[in-house]
Amino acid sequence: MNDFIPTTGTEAQWDAACERLNSYLRALGMDECERQNEIILQILQSAAARHATQPELDPTTLAMEEAHEAIEGWFARISAGTDHYSISGRVSLLISDAARKWPKAFLADEVPPEFVQAMRASKVQAGPNLQISSMVPRPLDDDPNAGVRPSMSDNGTPWIIPLVVFCSLLGGIVIFLSR
Image (cartoon, rainbow, N blue to C red; front, side):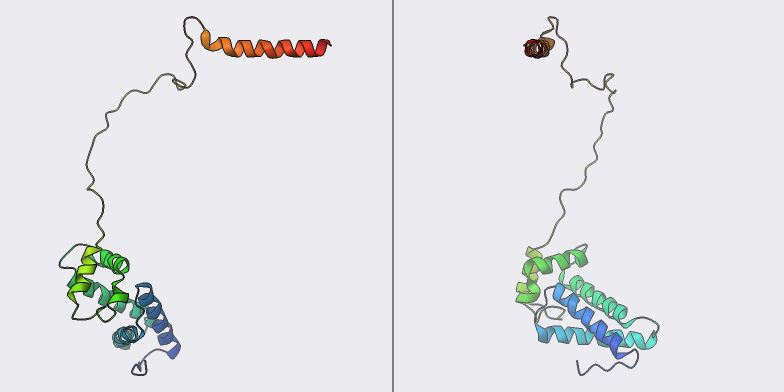
């Protein structure tokens, strides 16, 4: 990072921007220090150029905006015209572990075909398309307890068992108390 000397902003601001970029690239799976430092230097130089024209903006914000633009532009180039390349590209990058397997290819102009193949093989697709269906309204049941309590049959059998249990308990209590 010795090649980076910004003309605006404080050293602490640019250190914070560098640290944020470092964390962001590690979150994307970039572990190769040399390539990671190259990318950070390029992004910080772009952010410093913007900061020279817009000194009121925070260098960390500018650096992250530059990183997002660079990554989205790179995904657009390697995605072969698919929709949602930014989101699916980040997910594919993590699933395929491509940033660790091909660290020199990340944000490079020349991308090996194996890298592109790994990214496309791990493409995330949504489920089936939403289909319109209709629900036919039906009237509500009159009785909110319908189907919950047992219905009384003609001979009254559902009530016999609880009646027998109650009478047995009552008889047992009477015998117990009469002793």
